[in-house]
Every structure is written in C-alpha cells, then in structure tokens.
Image (tube, rainbow, N blue to C red; front, side, top):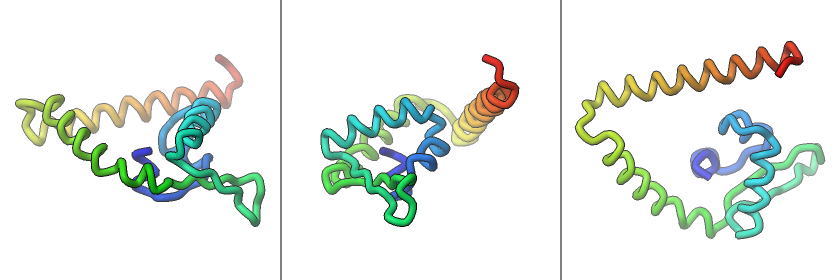
Length: 113
C-alpha cells in the first residue's frame, strides 16, 4: 500500500518491480486487499492484459495513520542514531537488496535454481 500511496495508481507489473515481490505473492496480497476494499483493480481498456491497481477511499483514509505509526517505529529503530548513520545504514540495505536482485536475475537468465 505504501507504494500506491506514493504513486496513486500503477500496473501490477510496475508494483512487482517497485516492491521486489514475486508476482504470485503480490497477486495473492492484492486479492486480499481487494476483498477488504483497500484497492481496486481496473482492466486497461486498450490492453486487456494490463491491470491497473488503485486505492479506494477506505485505504486513502488509512495513510495518515500509517505515516504516524511509521514515524513512531522509526524513532524506536533509530534511537540514538545520528542522521549520517541512518543514511549510511539505509544505503547498505539498498546495496544488499540490489545484490539479491542481481543474483536472482542471473539465476533466472541461466535457468538454474
């Protein structure tokens, strides 16, 4: 939902890229979110293979609470961290994620698992 709060609407393919989730996992999550009226899936009229995902009014109302909780969690996680340390830590996490994504791409290209 965080990605959708930022982007407002996007395709499932773009959500897969943004979240680094496997498509089957994301599809299951989206089905559950749709059942509880947090997202709406819209089939592209020009290309029926594409499905846009957008937020509902219910989920839009949850954004402020999410931000508040997220800020509270950040204050717990980063207690006694200097700003520079927080930035550096997050850069390390991004590098780890990138390494994992590259590894997965290499495995997929070579057909190995």
